[in-house]
Amino acid sequence: MERSQWGTRAGFIMAAVGSAVGLGNIWRFPYVAYENGGGAFFIPYLFALLTAGIPILILEFTIGHKYRGSAPLSFFRMGGRKLEWLGWWAVFVSFVISVYYAVIIAWAMRYTIFSFNQAWGTDTQDFLFNEFLQLTVSPGQTGGIVWGVFIPLVLVWAITLGILLAGVKKGIEMANRIFIPTLVIIFLAVVIRAITLDGALIGLEAFFQPDFTAIMNPSVWVAAYGHIFFSLSVAFAIMITYSSYLPKKSDITNNAFITGFANSSFELLAGIGIFAALGFMATQQGVAVSEVATAGVGLAFVVFPQIINEFPSFNGLFGFFFFLSLTLAGLTSLMSITETYVAGFTEKFGISRRKAVVFGGGLAALISILFATQGGLFFLDLADYFINQFGVAAVGLVEVVLVVWVFRKADLLKAHANEISDIHLGAWWKVSLGIITPIVLGYMMFGLLKMNILQEFDTETGNYEGYSNMFTLSGGVAVASAAIVFGILFSIAKWHKNQG
Ligand code: PHE
Ligand code: NA
Image (cartoon, rainbow, N blue to C red; front, top):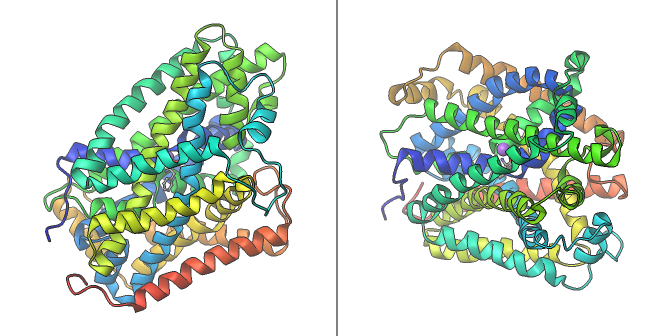
């Protein structure tokens, strides 16, 4: 069977940008920057982008392009079973993410409709938790199905799996070619409207106000690296999978720079829009920006509805555009994560794309319905906690150490990238990948383990408030170990005769 390919270079870039630009750009970056030095955060941020984000993106693009397979197959071709498991590990992390990422997109989709008449009323927090999510049971318990979440969730999966069924060129590429330009236009409209609001300047001042002492704080650097990994979708098997569909004659390094800078531009734009809107709300309520600044679920589904309530005019339209932006940004990322295991299963078992989508995607969809029950938020928190704390940085660290130091493939990959790319890789790339990234990620993992073992949770940044530390930790470790065990088991199984 012939391997799927992107139709055009722009199509590939659009898909890679579609994966990178997600909920993280809109609801995560602005707050992370604000909390970690404001304007001064750009120093560690740019450093992390240039020494980890883009170098790893180039690494993954090169691996996918050279070995022409899903992450597990590419790693298998590079180093046999001793490397294949790493691909599966990343694939299982992606599987877990897809399960809960879909749920948040479903909420956003539901909220686009709520926007029209501000169905959330004045107590937006009470509405979210009690009316919309019906979180009436205690953490860890599940109750009945919450239809308001269930229906959009089914829709999210139907759209995503439908697109994947249509294939790489006719499905993923086509969808991104429509979704990404649309997203950019409507999000620009949101940002422009936000910066013309009363008080916008106060918000922007709060966002950009540099705190240069923050740069001396190691945790700020850790935050920058953590965010860059998540935001660029590296170390998730995604970028290897996507680049494996590149035609033989394709540029690698230039595409990686374009993807990286497009993603960063989008988050900078989001930071401006979000903080302008927060400045407006703080002014309306006569409080400081710091009192309303937040991230994640709270920002999107509690604070933003309040902002929309206080809007001078066209509240419904502004809300609709904001939640539609979240939905589109989320869908293009969800496609990319789901494609990692669709591709992996197709190649490993020699099954058709259709079967892989129906069984692999179907399984993820089924599990994610757990989130549409009354105890759902708890699972979401647990999954999110584990992924952000252990998943990404750990896979990234093991990836660079194995590829550069154990299997010593850096020069081989560099030569491959240089042969076909405009921008030639030199010492910068090797030093970043082989030295800077492992040191910073190693430090990060060490700090995380220490924090978890000593149970010094920082309740400010976590999503696990209210749950017992031991429970969260054992849950996280259980998911992490399960992912590795799955990885090893899958590597033991033989590749279907057409592959490997
Ligand atoms: N890059 C996405 C974002 O910024 C997050 C993501 C990570 C999506 C991994 C898919 C997979 O939101
Ligand atoms: Na991103």
